[in-house]
Length: 175
Image (cartoon, rainbow, N blue to C red; front, side, top):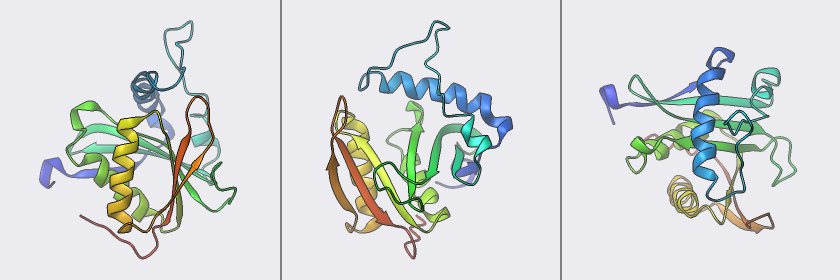
């Protein structure tokens, strides 16, 4: 994509909290088919950990995904993964592309930009019940790593988790 359709991964700031909160509602709505997510009494799913992205900036990294001037999604990253126990690993905690931009290469490009931004060990966790997400991550990670990612299964509820581990150092996949 080029020009006004360029995919940009922009670090979010606390002034973007309301935008991220709105996008997290869309994300949660999509995932409510996979997980037992319930609306609160205010009609919102909510995301309790969002304030931590402003209070723990050395450990949590929020991003907005843009296509040209339009918001196309977000990525929330943590340093330290519940799947590895290594506090130095980077973990894709949440990743979302709005439906308008799915299957267009936006998510792929945003993931590559994310991994290139932090050349380090990465963990990506996907619930087995999230078939669309599992297909996306399996393909994108295989392309990015040339098939060298380690894939394991972990117990979870209500679904097993697929865990991908790889290192993005020296792997700048810029296309």
